[in-house]
Image (cartoon, rainbow, N blue to C red; front, side, top):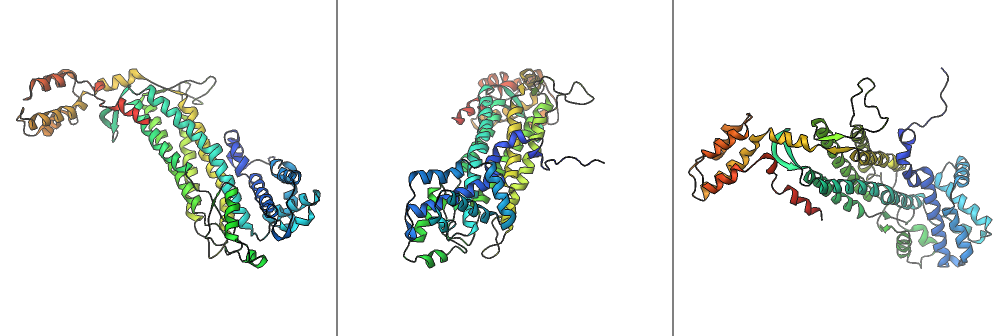
Length: 460
């Protein structure tokens, strides 16, 4: 058998690349290395801006050219880092040498020893991951979640008054409206989105074991914690003053738990929509040229929601694993987090792919109001709840002497199908006030959705 040409192993880099490619800008190896270069360059500039250790402040053009190593980071730098790492066998050391090479080109050899000054690799890495993960969440994941939320919000408002038979335990139950059910998911997802937006992206910059030992050895007169704090904050991150060699990754565990929570709510959305499609409440809009089955021409399969389900499960499995493992590091440092964190992009990629499918799926369904009405009209027995509740109120008010309203309606309706005529005849024979009878006679399943439509207003 002829060997295949080199192919991507992950479907995220193959079949689904177009849907998740934005994440590669931040969470690929190249994206991580660009962030590392940024941290190294900004630390060097911090030291020279403050003229520490007798260094000189770089002029504006030198600063611009040095920062251009970050803004212009591309294939040439990727290739050079690969060449350097082949020798160093150390990714962060390769980045240091890349920056040193740039300094030599700019005639800045006099400050070359301030490159990676008093820094351990993890000082560079933890800040780089915080920068890239934060950017991926803010620039890609959250906007895509927001699209889903706003699409659901539009559906909630549009269908707020479309009465629908509810199904608790899969059985006919007190009606709701399509819009109110969409609104429930909007509310759930908005809360999680707000929690994700409030994430602290923590960073440390305190040396080999988090003690500033090398810094103090170089100059004990400096307030190194204050310098560290100022530098970390200058990158747009939050400062963690108490760490070992690594920043403990608790913020990552919190973030991944929240994203995983969002995944599970979205999974619930997908299974509900899939079920409504199977019940005929939602119909799927045929897409030109699409095939639902290789043998059954009539089929339109809910593939968007099924694909989303599977990818949400994969994403949560990875995120849960990341959240569980990243919070543990043996003593002051082990390298388990190094390979683990390289899978953050994969975990978020499956979630982003699911969000893309959900958005597309929501655009390919419509509500079948005729089916909703027919199902409601076939289930008059659900009004048993309303009738027994009204009787209870009448008994309390002294207008009825019925002993056990619930048992009476249970006998009439449980496990039975009854129609409007039977229910009206039953109401006419009740020992309740005339006004209560008149009100109950007007009840229909479609009109028994309570405040469902008004509840949509709580979305704001």
